[in-house]
Amino acid sequence: MSRADRPKRRTLAPYGFLAPFFVPFVLFTLLPVGYAFWQSLHRTARTGGTFGRTHSVFSGLDQYADVVREPYFADSVLRVGLFALVQIPVMLLFALVLALLLDSAVARLKRFFRLVYFVPYGIPGVVAALMWASLYDPRLSPITALLDSAGIRADLLGPRLMLWSIGNVVTWTYTGYNMLILYSALQALPADIEEAARVDGANGWTTALRIKVPLIRPALVLTGVFSIIGSLQLFTEPQVFRSISTSVTSTYTPNLAAYSLTAGDDYGGAAALSVLLATVTFALSFAFLRLTTRRQG
Amino acid sequence: MSLLTRTDGAHATRTGRASTAVAVGFLTLAACYMLLPVYWLLVAATKSQGDLVDSPGLRPAHWHLGANLAALFRQQDGVYARWLLNSLLYAGAGAAVATALSAAAGYALAKYRFAGRELLFSVILGGVLVPATALALPLFLMFAEVDATNTFWSVFLPSVVSPFGVYLSRVFAAASVPDEVIEAARMDGAGELRIFTGIGLRMMSPALVTVFLFQFVVIWNNFLLPLVMLQDDDLYPVTLGLYTWQTQTSRLPVLQSLTIVGALVSVVPIVLTFLLLQRYWRAGLSAGAVK
Image 1 (cartoon, one colour):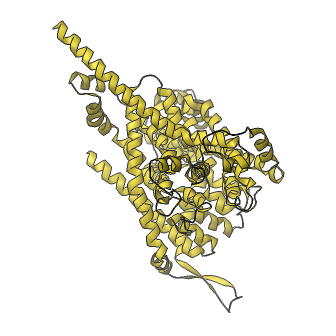
Image 2 (image 1 turned 90 degrees about the horizontal axis):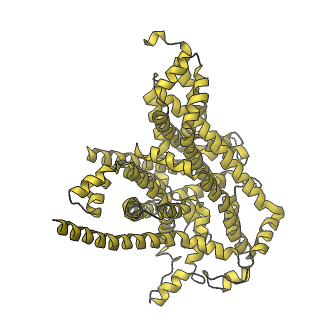
Image 3 (image 1 turned 60 degrees about the horizontal axis):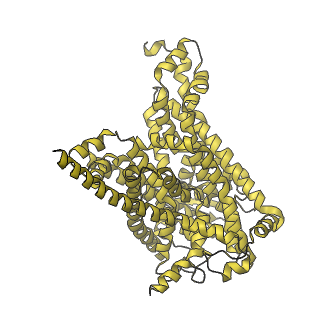
């Protein structure tokens, strides 16, 4: 059947199926991004004194320059950068080891462990932060008590350890989710791979590292990209800890800083910061994607 | 020869048994780590406000769960029940709509060839990379422009968009709806919409449970969007409600035990949803992860 023979409704059908998704997609994803971009380039000005009408004036990249020049900007960016560099590898390695062990080492209890590891993902970030906050609280914490008895005095809610206390909450929440993605990829590998490796004399770990891990690289890349996005956008956990500890400032992460600007009615500044943050996240995810997939070929 | 094989075999099982023990030990430790805060939550929810502060965190004190639950649903004229209901509405209805929209879009992208298909798919994939938290503030500014902040719709509408759901649906449609079946239905004279709802949706439905569940969790856990959009606490989802209680505990210490028991209750619906749907979402997830 040639293209011209097809009934017209069939050429229109895919657009009909896509429209219900695309209309809200444009309204609530593309448009806000565009609007924030427009707003970041304009400043509000008033004509005729303080009580005059407001209108917006094109201000170019001024607001970006203002935001970037603020001392909190570099601090918060470096903080999430350091966070990402440490937390993401720790979490993904943890998830990978769990997935490999579940895939090959244990036959029984598989379902039980898988379910247990996935429990934290279902718990909202707010609730997770609340739970860990109590476990960190020096007056109640069984963890600090344990560390104390080992001779280590650690203030888990203090300024020095706060970032890593948050890192623990994030690791706790998302390890199981990443484990499940990696585990599913492992399960999809053909069974004769393991068989062949065993015949060749490879032991469990060699098979895992040399054969299985390279084969599930796409799944690893996926978890890596999601983790990068998550780290740079860090908000919920530090925001909850803010109500408990003074170690978290209102500009602790870029996302918190943007939220504070909005709360202070500096919408242009908040827009500039949001656009900057989204661009950097997008660029880093994309770069990571390119880098890791190119090496594969 | 036979002796050699036997020793070899015995050796293999011995190291095998030892490494299995190490593996199970590690898996068990990891399980303890995952369950520690949950155990703490269960214990803490049964304590009175006094015991919460005075007794060791991981050891049960006097049983006070019933009274805590009663107090939870009495606080501020039962606002907590309202929050739970709001969350169920935002997450349940939002995820249902998101799944329907994603399924149709994913089906179109997988099963039709049309002008602009790859471009549209790239734009949607780009949408996957735009983080939801980066959208919250611009969305607030946009809704403010049309005076629609602090409404149910300002939180509900943005959550029906799930680019990741479209991506998964495309993978599912490609894997589970054969072209031959669609062709056969066309021969029988069925319309495109009939084919999608009658055949496509039915074949994709086990996998679509995954899309529903993930969007349900995303909306249920969403915090920044309701935080910036809503002032009226009658519209709060349960996460935002618990957060506001938490921020007031220094003034009203009783809110601490209410926050804890409220957190426990808020986890129940999501655990139930996962348990009820678990045989579907695992199948779907593996299909999504491989591609």
